[in-house]
Length: 498
Image (cartoon, rainbow, N blue to C red):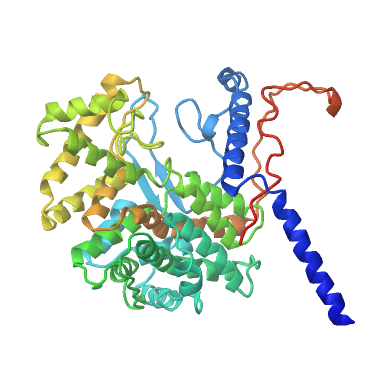
């Protein structure tokens, strides 16, 4: 009897399948096309309804971008971690930019470890996190501690990185950070000891996640051989990046030291830069470390923040392709004017790498960087390119001053030379912004801890509502605005999948 019932059930199931197949009208491709058309229609509605009258920002004294009329950041907090000094003096003149890590001038910091022929990133990370320069014994202990943290959970590389490669390395980093939450026994513990433990793990892990993520991408999408090197505990962060990235793990001392300098100069830049402020805003809500750092990564990924050095490299490639003589100031000047008039490169009207939200006369990080970049260009046989960069650095501020009305001076920023350095180090473009993140995670960690130590209120700025108040209209009484229905039976019947 049971066999008869089962046969009947099977027969009914087959009949139902046949009936279902008979009513199929649209393929998956058709549904996708219809979906795209509907989204395009709705997107136009967003664009039509979204703009706010710019005059309202003036009327209500809104500091757009949290900056005042002169471009200075609006004061929203206090920090002891770093100090970015620039702006205008009382006599109306611009003052030279200076950067301090925990009260120590970045020039002195760099001069110290360079003179002693040491790598500086680990020392700077200690300084940012703990507020003082380490003694020799403290530094060796801290470097050993980071070496112990340079490991990922079992099968993490295979299951999280290699099995699902991404074309965007910043997303790979963010996904890796959020996944590490699942491996943490106390992910929600926001005690300072536990947060420090989590931050040290992330500082040590970022180079691995970024490099392995790129290697998975290159293997999957470019067909490159997959070579995975484990980091060496005794090496610095800069050395390990080159060691893991290159198939033969070889690098020169100058290459490693210049990459280390890059990490030092990008490690911290005040609490007001977009990604650090994001980290502090999210941390103020009381959330976990992984969520706060992932949010900061999302901010840094933006082309207005961490992706600027890629634009500089691309701009110079376009420049070299469109001028015949790299040594001609006349040709270079013509090209730069075309950039400003949206007639060259990406037609954005920008000379990338020139100008900064805070600095005017100079970016102290770029000043330091340039001293070392020339030596690497000689080692790599790219002196002519370095001279072209130097010429643009000299000509651009003058041309910008002639072509545009600006309220302050402009100069080369850190991004102007960093992309050139990365290209000389044969770092893939996909890792340019992740290298920034590998450095800035030290600053983010210090700011997260400072935010938690001070236990302030949740950061919540105000937005003034300027939309008009409207009465509620019952559904049957509403009049259409624009085309209401594009397709009949939209997204209701799909092709049966095998």
